[in-house]
Length: 158
Ligand SMILES: [Zn+2]
Ligand SMILES: [Zn+2]
Image (tube, rainbow, N blue to C red):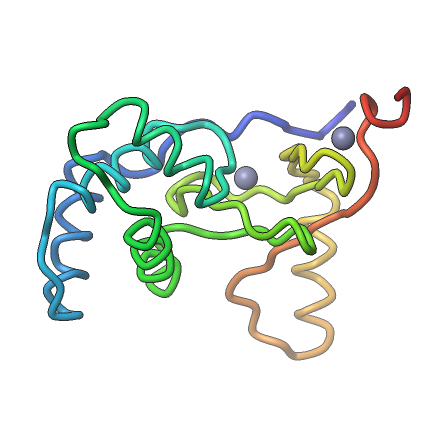
């Protein structure tokens, strides 16, 4: 696996900074800063998984049952965070969307359409080629996302 990197769990932002950006975002959208919203952000920050709104909600309910965070709050907060690029989402067809913190080093994804498993990777050659293609076509590239769909190793053996 030369030149292929597969671990992207490092955060590129401190939690305190993220939290203060989040407070600013809520203010800009005339929304109140609540403990439920903070817990959504914190849980996303501390998770290395790509989470569906339902699995995020489940984690929060398990850890902070007394807060009674509603699933609707999770959906709305995720939408807000995604609009401002603080989280990014991957869609996997009818099964829905999975979210992860935006402040991680750039990486691409392989998505299993059977079990929803997600494999992260970066290949320097692919990255490089994309920049060169954009340049050759006179395109000013700001970002890219690549999602490869298919069936993971485990599901192939089932
Ligand atoms: Zn699978
Ligand atoms: Zn990812």
